[in-house]
Image 1 (cartoon, rainbow, N blue to C red):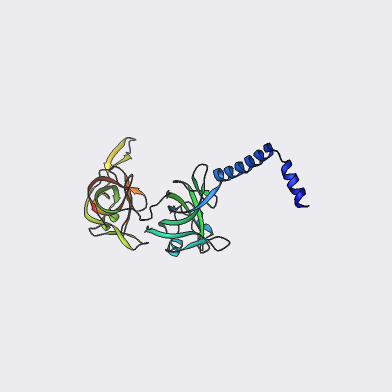
Image 2 (cartoon, rainbow, N blue to C red; image 1 turned 90 degrees about the vertical axis):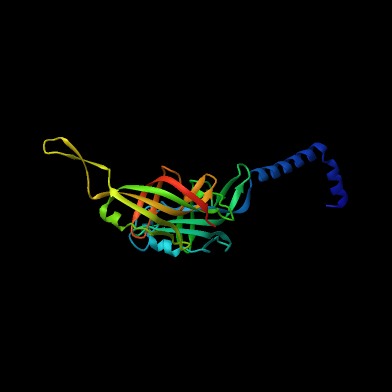
Length: 283
């Protein structure tokens, strides 16, 4: 086609046709920008929970990860995509050993997410990133499954405080109560730092009532002398979040709330926080 012929055809295009073409182009660009996704790096914190671990080296089927997987995870672990690009990197790690063969594990992940421009949602490998949502990744050929507990973890972390709290655990077996002593500690095995220390211990006969049936068919209310009520004064290392002080993962320090403690020789599950005595800068 000659240049003259091409120019003649261009002159034949009407103004309306030009406007229509431009409108289509602008519309396509607008749709892409509105519904498109932009890559972004952000920090999220997950708690490893809720996987069927039975495909691991030994028989195990608990809600929390087994010790061999907890021990395998390290700072700097990464997940790559097919092209070798880093999708996620472990930049923070909390491990709390429980009696038995399981751990409480929290990971702070630097992930390459996509932002949906329509609703500003963050998506990682097709998984929407939001508190309470599920997130899974593959690190060193191990599947890591977790629940998001913080969907926008600050790059500088949260400010740490020392908090003095009083807690109580009722109806503790006498043998278990005798193990607890002043100076007992709870460690974060991820950082190898002490995050809780027993400052004082008070053990008394339990006020928990035991109801038994008598030979005559009646009911008898008594107290089991083998049960003890344990009251502890604890020094905790906590993070100052917008919603209050958070301890060991995402436990909120507030009178009346439960507190799970994994001390040197005993696990105290769901102790009750009686009071917060004091707090001071822990940096």
